[in-house]
Length: 192
Image (cartoon, rainbow, N blue to C red):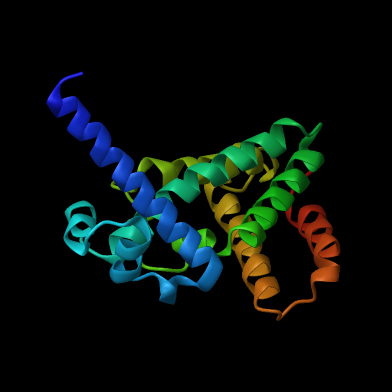
């Protein structure tokens, strides 16, 4: 391995460590607790080293969002591939989405709530964001209905899931009715 390759590998490892540490800290204490000073202390590097990877917290949030989007896409595809039939796939997709949001609140916020400097629904949207939407579209496109644009239907269904995830987490909706909400959403919105 050349010196250049070793340096690139070490740089990539430091970057992964920064992102993993930011994610862990955010999940434990919230995004307000994630500062470059705290991250530098936790990973035992100086703040200038941190800034050599990310210009600031916004870029770190963006990196967490990209990583989280890739994980979300995997979770959605895994859930839908194990389900039999359109209704079961849509219900599995909704359940996996809501479970991801509940299990990873700081990551979910990085993807959908916070400014990570990422473009959504544009030509320059990063691939992990596009792939997460594609994972939704793959399942929901088949139940959109003949006269409905599959992308628009997917956006509407996604917005409903996002609302359920957010309102439930903020205790605006009781958790014990989550299953009924998902069933109603699947039965009334999707053409099965």
